Length: 396
Image (cartoon, rainbow, N blue to C red):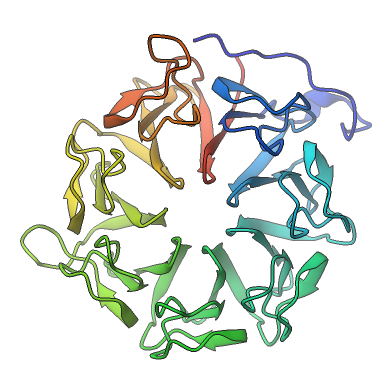
């Protein structure tokens, strides 16, 4: 695969010398029906990773369902957005899809951005959370149930240190290790012991000592200081990983094949009815829906417990999309900050979201086991939306 490293347009580039910043380019693959590849071209699926225009010197990326978001070093604290905008999820005051990244106006001092289904969230340096986009289920957290094409503040949240978006819910971790949630709660994905949706944050029951959070399509996930994972919400595909298929309105432990709690977890991420955990030894475990290869274990069967993803070692980061999984794997010595990190992918490739052309060219094919994505190396971070994937890498 050839990665096209065309020079980005000058829009939004820093006024000072570009050499003052590390050249971290964002690349994307997959569906471009709403401009979510960010390359400014007519909607056409991209089967290999190509550059997102304008976004150089990226420091963080995230993806919602059909939209994407980035923070950069040359506009510190500002959010870039592109892709679908039918509910205002790009935050630019319109509902016009954007095939090129635009800055979200009126929002600054942002340290983290997170995409949900059609809603986006930003964590500012003062510990407050802001949201924009779809809000009919209360997922903006501002007390209303209407969409907003501009950022609004999530009510009552201070001291927040991490955020995450679900299919129609938002999540926040506070500095005291508690987790708060708001939005749709039809399957218990707010974790407060009810199935009542709310337009303002409620505390996830019984969770303390949390170090990281993630949202799935209809479920929430939390990593605790002891290296175990808790999950809550919908469980029809086993995506809670507790060994059953019963929806849970409060958190339950994710377990392995022996039905003992999964441990030594470093990172957890939820996808479309499945989830992944990166373990301390650099391997990956997966649970939930598997019909399109999402679990990466060679089988189309669902799994209600966390099972190893074969062939993955030396993994440093993971991402889950709507129907596919991704891992950054250390491939040989690490000469620099992100040296020799390569992408591995598995699951559905119906929209080219694995970044792999498979013979005959452009024919959708699912991968039931991980395969290395040829091309980009020195990858810093990965993210995935419903049918697209994104990576930050450092061109040599």
